[in-house]
Length: 192
Image (cartoon, rainbow, N blue to C red; front, side, top):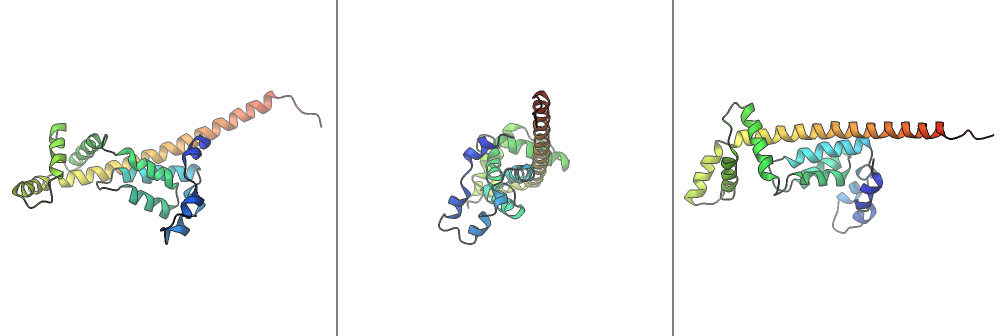
């Protein structure tokens, strides 16, 4: 595992714990499990970070950080994985999520232009104008497949990330053991 590369970019836990204004979180952030990089911690962070990345809400980092604190998995990795869904990837993420939800609910699928139009309507959803009222009515037909699809997509992405990290970590450790055994068998025996 490229631990040294990842650790180079991780924040210092002691420095974060000394940050003023953390209040009750100060002692929770001193938990070494939040900062260790091992198979269990990285796999759990993959699940929670990817699942929270697909939550249909702003500030997805907050639930990812809370999940990392509660389940004691790697906090920085969980937070970084939330950024899978960002302004550049939002349209395809919503498109896939909506399609999965529509398939599960047996509703007609939308094309990319219709999804783009729905995203545009989200910006004027809570106003008091007649256009905002029409947007709310239009969104009511699409909210169920959207929410269900995003939750299912997030869960599937989290499960795949968890299983993938577990597989990668085990594969890496097994290869390291085999290489060490090969080096040891190739070196001449030492005289005692």
